[in-house]
Image: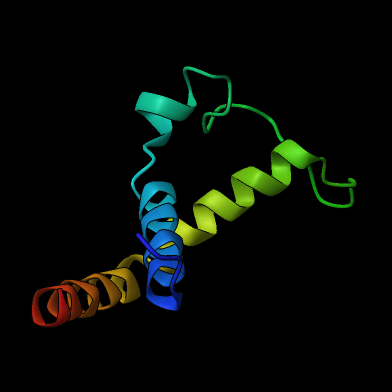
Length: 82
């Protein structure tokens, strides 16, 4: 398999899908990153854990509908052009 631009875009889509389907109560709370974990308050310097949790929550919130469209286009292109 050649390293093409489509393969890189497809990899980014798959990684974004993986982040979007993470469930906080089932998966993230088992590793100590659940909703009930205190990640800092207003005015505190955010650590790496807080930044990752914020990224996961924002991807799940903002990218839900665009991911449906991007996945659909990706599937159609894969079916048409192999």
